[in-house]
Length: 146
Image (tube, rainbow, N blue to C red; front, top):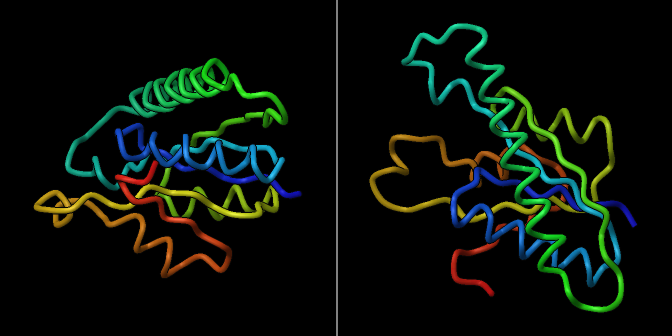
């Protein structure tokens, strides 16, 4: 079976969606790719030197490795254990996902439901933009789903 693409912004809800997607991958007996987009548009009001973007990508990679290790260390069940890969890129989430899809055919993309409240007006609603743009299965995991 094709792998799942698990998206995270490293928030509690984003990581919860990754854990849910990982458990789903175990049930489906498929592998996973963890993905984070370093969105320069959200930091466009700041002038950053080019090396700062390299640092953001490096920090993202470190966080993805920690998340990957967490998934592997907490998977104590017998049976299938998904292989985990990761990728992080600079760009809008939708563009990063489309780039990943050009390289690999994913069965499904898993993302956490977008936060509610005032922050919703300040930042792009990634879940909605994914629904509006993608032409593949998308699973949006609510915050309270266990």
